[in-house]
Image: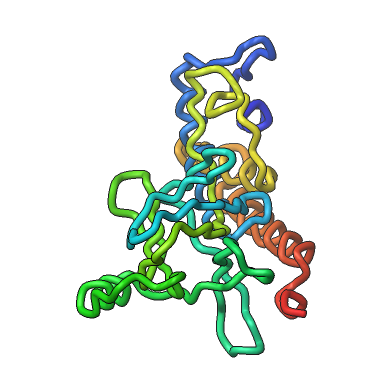
Length: 240
């Protein structure tokens, strides 16, 4: 925030402040949140990967995604992580049954419509373990895991999602959603994007061109994505 405010020639936030009350600073904070969401949605950043171990109850076809150890839950901006598997010629999701198998058993990703159809039409007796899944959101910010067919016993399903951080609220203190919340994705494109947004909103004729600041933002974002992709092994190195 202070780096952005300094660049656009506005009053910065004192180091002793843990909240914001200034109207313009609150507006810039809104810009920062919007740009941060755009950056987070642009790529499956490694820093946002979260693995949920879900205690899936027997006979259930739909259940809320809650990590059984930490209690962590995804949000509506969470998305399924997939990798290109050359052995099967398609992308496969990172979802496994880890209950008792020596090697975790991968679940096949299905569409929500397919799961609803098969669970409704076939309505078969639950089998030992489910073979298909879909990630769904139907109740606000709660994400659900749907499976087919339902299992006849409780299972532990491990699902990895890219889970962006909720919006930062600059009117509250603390590191859990407040002004001091850690931003784990690359901050340079967020800084450049917020500067561009703030200058665009001002509509100033003098000073840095908004065309230039937008280009810096886009270039910084592309570079950050390229670095994150390469550091994760690159597209061709994912599958052994």
